[in-house]
Amino acid sequence: MNTTFFAQPFEPVGCNVCRDKSQLPFDFTMAFQPIMDLVEERPFAYEALVRGVNGESAATVLGWVDDSNRYRFDQACRVKAIELAARLHLAALPGCRLSINFLPNAVYRAETCIRATMEAAHNFSFPHDRIMFEVTEGEQVTNGAHLKAIFNEYRRQGLITAIDDFGAGYAGLNMLVQFQPHVIKLDMELIRNIHQDPVRQAIVCGIALVCDKLQIDLVAEGVETVQESQYLSSVGVRYQQGYWFARPAWEALPLS
Image (cartoon, rainbow, N blue to C red; front, side, top):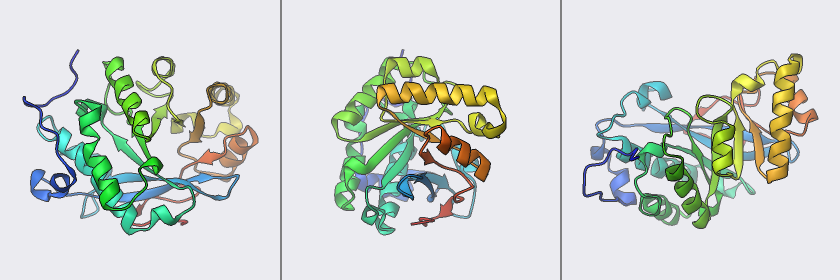
């Protein structure tokens, strides 16, 4: 089943085209939020989160995306994130990664759609092996083989792969059976008040055991209190992200 939305013939675009604002009917920028490594006490990664240039939310910007501009937007997000990360000297932070969300239904062929990403990494002198792609939960992935092919190609290119919002919507155990990413990010609903909820504790501990067996790094999203963070640390979840550490910062790297 074809889950892409491109006119034929498909023409992949390069880095310079993706930077051309006239290619989209709207402009956007990025905010950055750290994913903390609580063992090393430093950022493990920064997630690039789309924002409007006048302060519009991610939901507002994504509301401007439709079938006619989905591919251009996805490609432009990658280039914008790398450009800003390079400008903010993210690569100078030891081992720190740049995490970029991508729309799986906007990828026609992984080997051609990744071209702009690799060009941008080269042009902005950003190490491509520190780029992490998160598959977003917002779009239903009806073609698991398509997503598996994307992840396999990204691995071949030396990129890091991640499943976002694990445990919500379409991002669950069935997806994990089909392919194993480098990183899993737990949905924030599993994290809320986990220190007081034995059901959430059992589920998260089970996922942590699976990740340990499969050698997958586990990130807890949406950590908002010290109690949540302390419980997660006590069961070995060393990578955490959320307002307890820092809110997304517009074109800046908080806690860097």
